[in-house]
Image 1 (tube, one colour):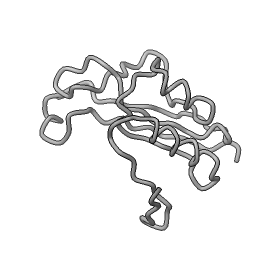
Image 2 (tube, rainbow, N blue to C red):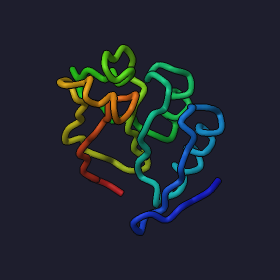
Image 3 (spheres, helix red, strand yellow):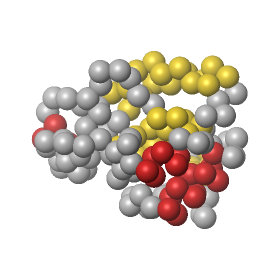
Image 4 (cartoon, rainbow, N blue to C red):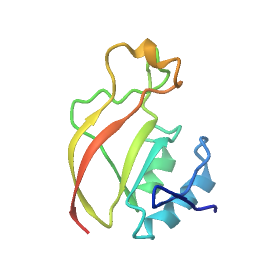
Amino acid sequence: MQILNYASKNVMPLTTMFSETVTHSLRILALESSFLRACGDFNAVPSDESMFKLSKYWNLVEKNNLDIRTWPTDNPIIGIGHILTSNAQKWQVMYVSIPQQDKASWANRSDHLPVTAKLKLLEQ
């Protein structure tokens, strides 16, 4: 497992294909207090077994009534981009956003729509 230092933060790059290796890596990260969030293209919908395994250590950041479909960019049919927070901390989700207009304009940048969130750490 390679840990990089980026902007004074420890970052571990993960493969874009969700696998047991990624599940194992995120399990290890959850035990490290400096790793409070994980985000990206998990290639797994929330109901997948791999996401269920992660729920022992991580919480899915979500908001009610939000269309979470992120792939493919121009006409999303499934939600596989996620933000996770360590369940060792308590977070307040201020907002979660996935672009709902001009989706086709994102196709030049990525095959997935971005997921953004504003979070407030309530308890360490």
